[in-house]
Length: 350
Ligand SMILES: [Zn+2]
Image (cartoon, rainbow, N blue to C red; front, top):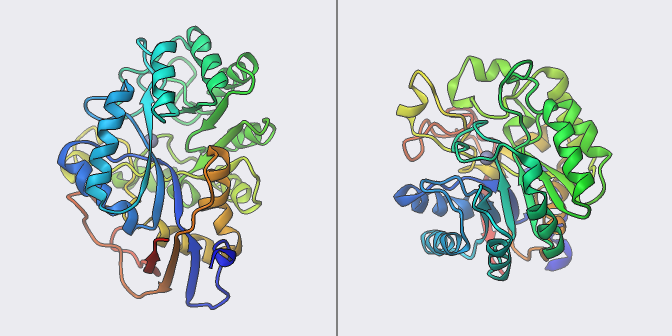
């Protein structure tokens, strides 16, 4: 029944939604990737953009396609895994052209040293403008982790805001380039993105919709980059998402790390929300009384920006008294041991 796909059921204990598009997910590598890929469909997601900061990193189309094949096999479901390449010094116009021909249309930009796996990231952004202009010509998408490395007056709290002039310069010098500001976390960046042309958008995670700095400092499973900030920033994120501003759509940045690593003296950054994507978002939007606008955030706007057709898959969630498990695949999931509130009842592929 395609005409009902983007509507939320009016029944209070049942929610019907289109399959989710997660525009930013980390599915790791090796056997761990197989296990994580299996969870994608069962979390409510039928399309996702997979990040390239694996070990080894994904630099070329051939590597991305091999990874995609692995994920498809492990998923066992008809998930559309969109692939990305890691921008680095050897990224060339030729490599881009080949990637685009093979359907790998996303390039991820990590400024050097800002988060997990960003040690091959780039330093001199301006030298990549020719690459960016070629991407614009080919209709490719640049996904940016918008934070400046800590240095001088830049620190973890203002790292995103300090990146705004760099972003402004890319937009100005590479007209028409599709850009995604990943995991937006500050009021300043939100205000900036709101003023951008339609070829610039931002993704919003589950955790940035509900936690602040205190929740990360007191509990390392919530530690992530960009770090959740103060109540004012949280309010700005919720406000813009609930206002249905077309620049903003869902990307979980689900990034699992094993418990032993999270317990180390230098715990890695990343929140693992990806095993319960639909449950978390229905809970957040239901609590805010905004379920009616959830389809735009988790499916319609992202697919439109990516030039993808609307999904025909339909997902149904029902209320539950179950809890989020304490541990999944050796990792602590987001909101572990807290009430799940909503769970997937059915996910029909068409
Ligand atoms: Zn990420």
